[in-house]
Image 1 (cartoon, rainbow, N blue to C red):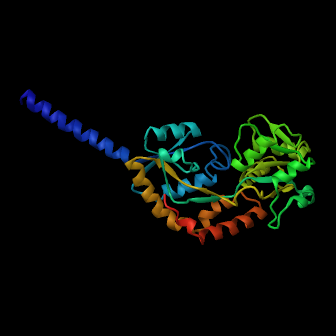
Image 2 (image 1 turned 90 degrees about the horizontal axis):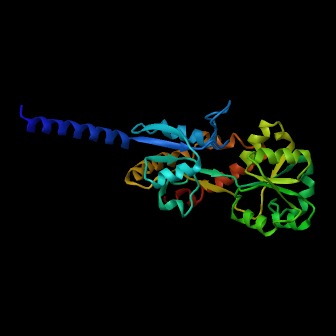
Image 3 (image 1 turned 45 degrees about the vertical axis):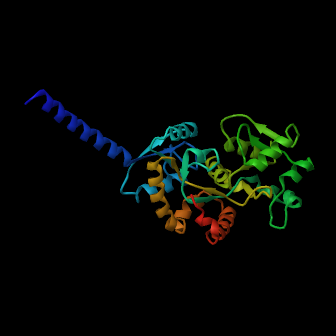
Length: 296
């Protein structure tokens, strides 16, 4: 056999091998998720039971044309790898104009209750004067009253309207900033001890951490008038032809999934009874609106 023929055969073998590797890579989804309970729970008895964990598992089990692997990753790395165009997807990202430049998002995949005002259950009557006809409290009126101390975590965003109020009244005796890594758990301890009168947290956060430290029965949640009734959650993949194909498949699954009680229950599990009633009303209204068919 001549050297030419040997080289030619080797080239074909290498070409076929590389092609096979490339084909396999394009069939593999790397699902990125952070350690951020109860959104995604990586350690402990609830590992894998976060509401985004369960949505992720639901999709993986129904996307038989793809292989899946899960990577525990902070948000910054997830965004960085998606910018690079890697074969990455995530159930844990919110849609923003900046992210849409390099991430392709699915149709609405989940509905989230927004940040609420968490208070001691025994103190609920103190907030009646700040409620509107729908039972939502006005943060600005509470702050202006000067009679309540509202706690929040340093460095965290609570949505633009709340952030704007915190910035507007920064330095006020009504605003208590907590510095540290404990987030809602640390604020809950301050609330129960009486160091603050209220705090900001999403309902699922307050219940999850409240259960963890044994105070879930001692707190109550009040909706806030300055923000919307819900936040829409999406699934995102790198904005590449590969990502477009994956999102197309995900969208076909979501059409039926969002109407299933078990799919909705992934999030409901972490809600208190009052928030669950509120959530089902919001969810039902959303399903019957045109927003459920929002384009990607």
